Length: 337
Image (cartoon, rainbow, N blue to C red; front, side, top):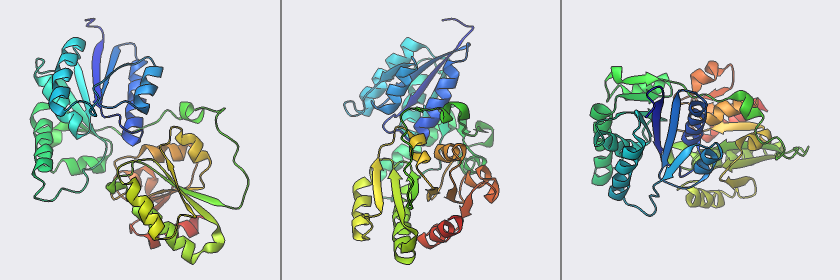
């Protein structure tokens, strides 16, 4: 191997095109343009991230977790690492952290690190022994096998320091290539129709920590209290809670104003049609979609958690909401309008 270059292997899920995947794509694309790096990516799922990486001529190997159990993935990953011979293994999310650090250890103790894209979601109940075992194994890998944990915000670093030594944690905030983002697919975006309807959107993985249920209840509250505003609410993204959230919308009688847009491959096009972006998460690291919304100058209303207050300059660049409830978001929407 050419010792004038650094050989880097990233390991990620790639199941959805969400914040962590966007951040990984941004990072890998920048690294691949660097003359002194060779970049390889192992994904556990086929999907949008794989297609985008291949379009940039980045080497991608998919170890499909829908067909392989964790032991078979680990065995194949060990072989892949032996073939690539990376200098550094960079992992993303729990399963990849465990598999990547173990594969590195079994290939001559290759240096590995992880990026923590957000705070851990709600702890499983005490009787969910397998989930607790996985979390404990992930902590062991972070504590003893991996050289460094990258936090995407100082707030997240403070949380991580409760369970990991401070000297192993570094803060590297997320970022986007603004020029490239604003020029993204300029010919695919249709001009927005001029009408009186105001579009309020949320974008992200449909998982518990994102609290899409609060977004839906906010829509219900606005429909009941301010029908004259003529609002429509749009949910961009997919995930395990979609059926449950669609059922909630039916129960709250908001199907006429709530639109499940599904998986979004062009967030800029969606943001160009958006009047207000809401962020209702219980916690966030440093959301890529907020950086993208700021680049497109979309007004933002966000829960004041994680790295969001610092990103929005403590209210100067967006509206911060302290109470994570529909009434607080409805009040903020009224003020922004």
